[in-house]
Image 1 (cartoon, one colour):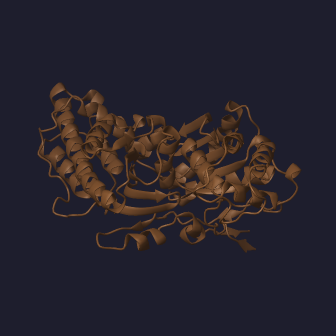
Image 2 (cartoon, rainbow, N blue to C red):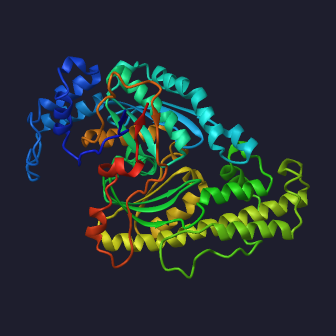
Image 3 (cartoon, rainbow, N blue to C red):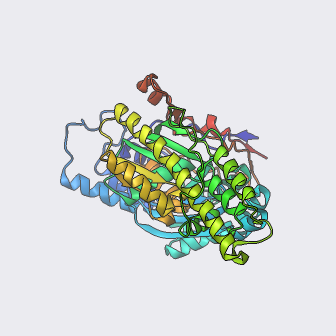
Length: 468
């Protein structure tokens, strides 16, 4: 037997349409309690049948209608599950953005032991803790599965072995309690969690998403509709931070990025003259492979025994040399970000002159030096920098739950799994999933936006299937 993992999702529909889709499943009493409240509240203020002309745009909703909609949204309770790489995370978030719980199980010890992410080891670590992580998220929120409205789960991009653990758990919970499922794009979640932090953040906006595996400059036109202004042609900045930290003999248990940022505080950022990548390329793409090579050569030229002598055992002179390399690397790595972001701002403002916000998110966005420098880029262009707190920059369940809420309210979700779906169902996931279509100057913006939707093409992007 074969069936799709996540069916092709419909275009965005109104809140009333979302309620209508739920009502079509059967009697309201068969729905979870919070979902019944949501449906009842919305239905009382909206027509029973969705229509493109539910309310003319020029019509202003009454205060009572707005109040009902606000109350209905608060009634939504979304469980978010994230297992795309090396952290097992779950969270429960209300529809209005209140975070009821947030649980993360780190694999820092595995990272230190293997010098990076080992997919098979990461999968086993996820499988060992996923049940406890999800249960703790529910317990901390003082809820049970029957109280939830839906389950959101990362379906890509990421490591397929790791993604499978989260998807399996999400479908297990959804099947047990008859809950809809929202498949979430990991990088979209990094961008949208800023809308939970800053309620004034509206579309369109420019987003820089920086992590261990990704460097993305994205014009967020609307929910699920993005255009890539730039991406990495080789390595991401987070990977460059991790490799440099490892070569410098730093303690990787706290993460390569944080360890290097701390060491750089004691170094001279002008001590080593690294070249800024790609200055001859007049686009918004990134490259960190060459900078990594420069770092390696600098370490070798100073005869630093970083493989044999960790930073904790280094002499004062040795430690200072490492700190200088760290500071010089960070200055050039972030300067590369600044230069590409400046060009992306110029491109974005030509496409969408109404942009007011510059979102910076992803694990590397928790770096204070990165935030400070990119805030300067924002201020120079009269934009407001929006960046989540560090706990929401690294991989977490809150961003998945919140993105699930946004798409659920727009009507983008999957029906609960069939009652006879085997518990040992195997999922084939494709870990590569672009966030929108690449943009180049001269290309029709309308054409780019038309082909850049994320969720309607979910099935074709991840090629999901269920097999016995």
